[in-house]
Image (tube, rainbow, N blue to C red):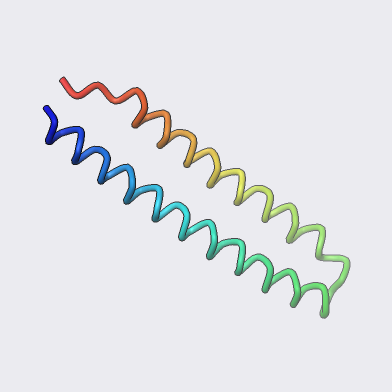
Length: 76
């Protein structure tokens, strides 16, 4: 039983690390695209912001669901 908890903890840490890497890469790409759009087409910045909010909210929901899934894990 202890080994299962250790493996679940390792898996949880791996998933959190991957989510953090994806989130940071997404934010960096969004900033880069936002700067390019601001220079070329300033009216389109609102669209980039909306897409960014949508993407970040999807990543946050995925993080919360994975956190809740591991908190309520029943290893029978």
